Length: 157
Image (cartoon, rainbow, N blue to C red):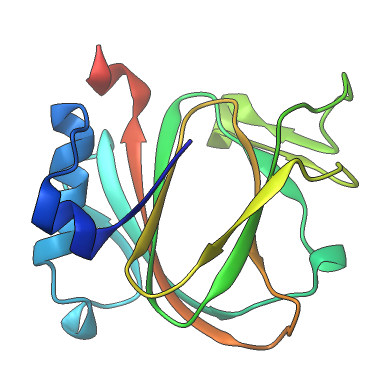
């Protein structure tokens, strides 16, 4: 997991793998105010972004998720949310396992190890297997405009 800020990355450079750096440059150069919600391909199905708008939820309404084949680069365009993360699934089986078909598994009731407060300009890079619970807020119902760039992990090989 890597947490960063776009303004700082533009100033100092990201220092990341070239593929991840490319994703950060997409975030820096894209005018999201003119981009429709939904999926936008960057490198076909190997790198694409999902532009989203939603209201934050109470922590009890959201499940933890993990991916097997994709890296997430989550970026808040406007609004704020908290993303909790858990270091372990405690040996539990997923409550909803779609890793093979849709590259995600969902877990309910995990205990958070930590959290990241995501504000405008913050990005969070999550690698395969890293459990995370996005879209939450201690004050549910707050609007968020966000993009998630999905990168096939094998692009980093």
